[in-house]
Image (cartoon, rainbow, N blue to C red; front, side, top):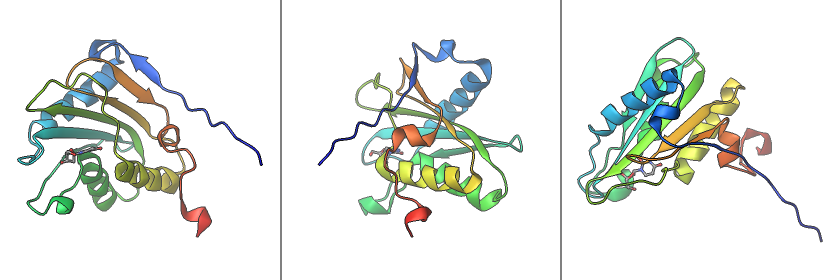
Length: 160
Ligand code: THU
């Protein structure tokens, strides 16, 4: 028997203003689209903005459904739109923000497991890392230089 240790790493910015200008702009677009989320059940609104290597910015917000599992997270709304519309483009950066209507979200909100798996698929497909920035409504912003930091031991096509 043996034990292994897997380390992962993130950069933490104190707030939005500490981010490079280009990322601030991307995060601001995520904040704007977050406000358009359709989240009548959870009251938890999430926005995602993707910067592609063709210069396009793709936005997505969470879309809920009375049949709860039929809804979709903001990250996958955006990433599937990018994959459908610009299948040849690479995703360079992704900004994510979440805010609850019922209490102020100060903790950085990381993408859920299903979104991590979906982002992983595109990172592997394009064979270059996707930078991911995530925050709550205010406060710290976490940066991951690749999806891999968020999903150690990921399942991908090499196992098929
Ligand atoms: N949600 C996202 O949009 N992204 C995540 O990564 C986590 C959760 C949404 C799904 C649901 O509409 C609401 O947040 C509460 O879970």
